[in-house]
Amino acid sequence: MTALSPAREIDAFNVVHDFEAALCEYAGAPYAVTTTSCTMALLLAVAWHTRNLGHEGGMISSWFERPEIEIPKRTYVSVPMSIIHAGGLPTFRDEDWRGLYKLEPLPVWDCARWFTSRMFEGYAPNDGSWVSFTQSPRMQCLSFHWSKTLGLGQGGAILHDNEEADRWLRQARFDGRLEAVSPAEQQELYGFNVLGFHCYMSPETAAQGLLRLGNLPRHNEPLPNDPYPDLSSMELFKRTTRSAVGSRANRGDMAWPSNSNQSSSRSATVTTPPT
Image 1 (cartoon, helix red, strand yellow):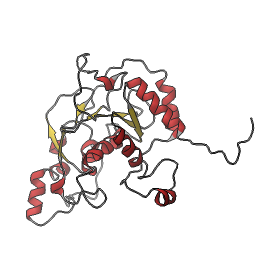
Image 2 (cartoon, helix red, strand yellow):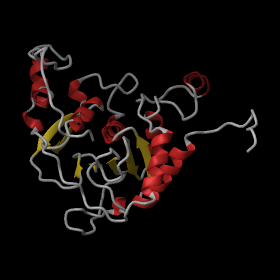
Image 3 (cartoon, helix red, strand yellow):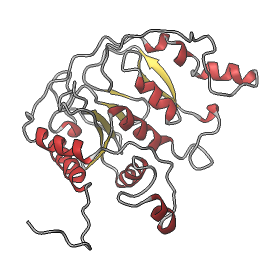
Image 4 (cartoon, helix red, strand yellow):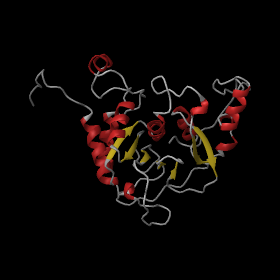
């Protein structure tokens, strides 16, 4: 083994790109953008669709500008939180879902509990039939948590079919900058045009994913749902409904709807693994 030339640079993100290419081949998707979790994948997917609604660099300045996004009332608690952080208002429906569900009216699917081959092409887990996804661009958000099908320590991804979205998502997951470009270089050469997040997948996780994906069966059944609580009954989300926002506006209070009655001493038992 010889030493590397000082002029040669090693791009650790090559393994991330290799893992994303393998995901595309396995799932039948044109594009895959990896993240730190399915929670962050959902946040980015929703943020892509709300990015043109706000002002001041993409920030939605008024609660009235936020679109309502509907999800099942029994799902993981971080999903409505991601919707809020991405500029939406979560609403809830009564749905007995299996494997995946849609964030209405967006073409975004939460697939945290389901990962199988050709899934982007329209394979439906509820009856084994093929379905047609008519909306495009569409996005399927995956979880690679240790409790999920691929079983990495952490990680998630967005499977999608839009070239413009792919460019935006890659910058959005990397603090609004291009990969392997320092903040100073980004500002000097390109400028910052995307309000980003810090949620890119590490090369170590991607390398583990490549190894596990190579041994994953082609067909995987959806995982059973956890005993999710009814999110629509939680006070935190009741305060972010359209009617609650309107009530606060009438009082001249448009600040974040915090809970002033929270106890300073509380105990909690975490029974549901993160998405």
